[in-house]
View 1 (cartoon, rainbow, N blue to C red):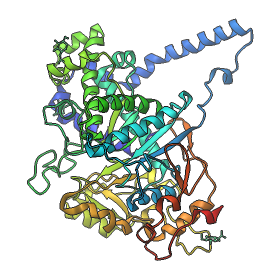
View 2: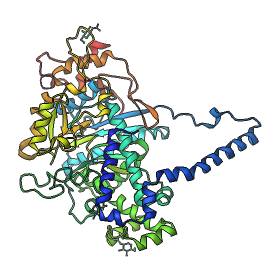
View 3: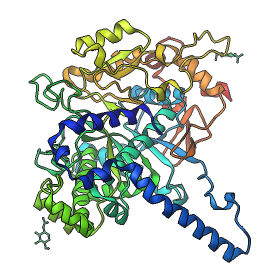
View 4: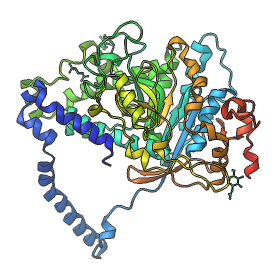
Length: 533
Ligand SMILES: *[C@@H]1O[C@H](CO)[C@@H](O)[C@H](O)[C@H]1NC(C)=O
Ligand SMILES: *[C@@H]1O[C@H](CO)[C@@H](O)[C@H](O)[C@H]1NC(C)=O
Ligand SMILES: *[C@@H]1O[C@H](CO)[C@@H](O)[C@H](O)[C@H]1NC(C)=O
């Protein structure tokens, strides 16, 4: 999948190559490993051909029949499901904004976990709501069969996330992010270490600009990978403190934010089991972000532990001679602590540095605009405001958005004026050019939480939300996407509501009645899913 995201990162690496002294010093050996893809392909070809001939011979030997090509090609993997999990315990207009957006865009009907629970255990932080997020998701994952391990889980916070782009875009970006990350991991750790320890990124959390809640010398802050965004993405001051109003403004997102996460059911089950163990051990852990961030920090330390342990002899010689940046990166006390843990700390966690799956608004308050990509004067203005030269502009509509079904179309009598993606306003990061599939409204500076009300009418579907909900109910279910080599379907065949922890169906009215004035802002009263059955 060569999306424009891929080209983005490739371009960055290419530009880095001649400038960076570390690259220049690197041995021919390493450069071959990194950039010698043609060479690798050539040397592997005889192996592939040999394997093919050998398999064919074995096939004839064991079955007595000559194989046809179709026998030897693996069948495509069967379709798998996407599950949308939203932990939320009670009625709230902010929850309904997530539910309505998800429906209009065609996401699976959400599982609203912890529904109806109250959190008043005075021995626990926030009455136990943080631990409940972990235990609620954990028991949902536990209810899935092992055959569903490749299903995709999309989990978002309940009260401050808005869906903006179609599930197809989100799913393709998830696979694209992992593919690029897995290439980086192989480059950093070497094939042997990666294969021996089955290291593969399968979980993508949001990334944020500030390391929170640890001090800078803790593993979740210093040991985690650097951002993959260009080093000058926010201008010459990138990654420097620019003063008191928003000291983190110019930092590239590098740290885990637990508001939005996408991963396979199998990988997420292992991660949430570890999180639950930690939460129970230390009931005053603060927040789920604290737990997931700590696990991510330990994973990165663990990767260095296994790299030093499993590095092949030849690479070990190479590593001793040249300065491998990883060697001195991890503090001895952290290496020792993780070695002391008797279980694997590899969970396949990585981050969405570009904010293409989700953008947490905190510390990005001044980076974003509501952008109509067909409106050049405004695009110019948004760049101008930030001293971004026209020639450096990253504001163009991404292909992985443009090729999904148009946002607005008419059935002929519903009064909707058809529009394509360049004609609707999309919340976009101006310096990076990325339009997130999900907006995570966690900015709180200067009372910014009220943006969840103040800018609700800016999201492209809000003015038409009621009719688009009707359209959604009248449209048959289709596959969500084809990505990662298979077809993706909704985990639920029902529409117009949600399911609770025990799988019981709750209609839109059950969950969102009383919020219509704010959600639809048309004074037309309740929206009834039952009208459509
Ligand atoms: C991040 O980049 C800095 C500067 O290039 C480097 O010193 C540091 O080791 C890198 N950290 C990681 C985790 O790779
Ligand atoms: C690791 O285990 C050893 C032996 O039990 C112990 O002495 C040491 O303090 C532990 N180190 C850490 C960082 O936990
Ligand atoms: C078009 O949509 C409107 C509003 O949902 C509905 O009332 C009408 O029956 C639909 N018309 C057709 C032809 O499906």
